[in-house]
Length: 134
Image (cartoon, rainbow, N blue to C red; front, side, top):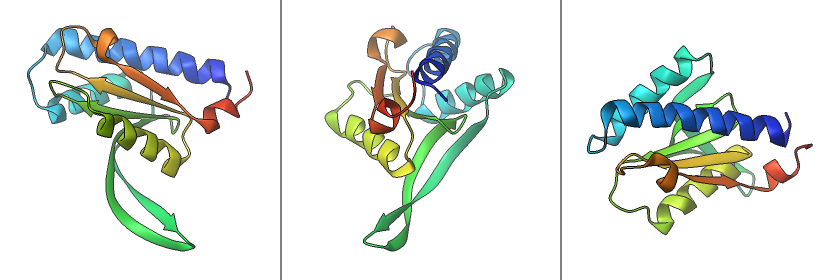
């Protein structure tokens, strides 16, 4: 996997999120957008895991957690979906932590409570992305 391939996948996911948003509009529950985006992703041939529980390794001890990742696409990009008036720093921290724990190179924070997904969507990369070849 290369940086270019991850970036292209992110672009394609964004397009599908825009489609869902244009179809449904703002104002629904996060869970509805999650289900519809999952349908679009699967329909377009992507491997999607939903509500993925994670484990944390703390000082050599594996801990089962209730940290739930909304969607994981092609085992590369974590989607953290929101339907809130304002994205808060805790939402960003949550996604960055999921990316670190699961060792995924990119995450997309998508807020469906907006008139324009592209203006509210926030992509994040980390050291796993930086380590990928160009």
